[in-house]
Amino acid sequence: MDGRAGSLEGQVVGVAENHDEFNLPMDSLVNRVMKHPEYKALMTSLYTNKRIEYNIRHAIASYVRTLSSFDSKFDNNINGVEHTLTQAEKDGFNLFMGKAVCATCHFPPLFNGTVPPNFTDTEVELLGTPAENDTINATISDDLGRYDVFNTKEREHFLKHQRFEI
Image 1: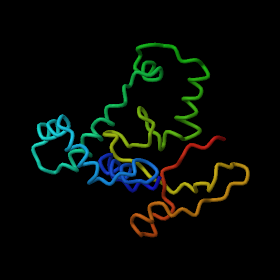
Image 2: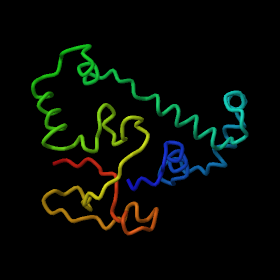
Image 3: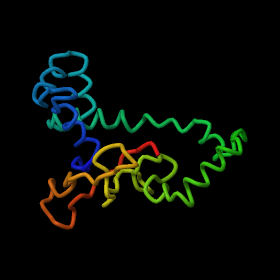
Image 4: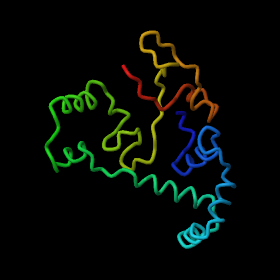
């Protein structure tokens, strides 16, 4: 949420080493990949450099980048392939893009907070993020966000926001 990973390649390290996720140091991940004959052959044939850890991170990130098929009902309607959106869906999209100002951070077509035109950078903002999912008795989180990454007052409490039920 604090955007500490500057890229998908960087996020691979965070996920691999996080004790709540893979809990696997990168050197152990490299050893596992390089012990597998087929993976080792693929890594050495795809990448000409000897930066095996980076190459593994790049391979995983490259795969993740392919996961957007852009063939959802929304995509097909926006691209004129079909005309099946209900009035409620159109109203929701107009609210999202307009009055609710969601699209100021969640840019089409990915809607994930990455910034056009390349959709590789993610915005982080000072949002006043609630400490808990409680819209009635909301208190602001004391999470310092990007401050913990850069130690600059200007980035204090800057976070990627989560979706909260309203």
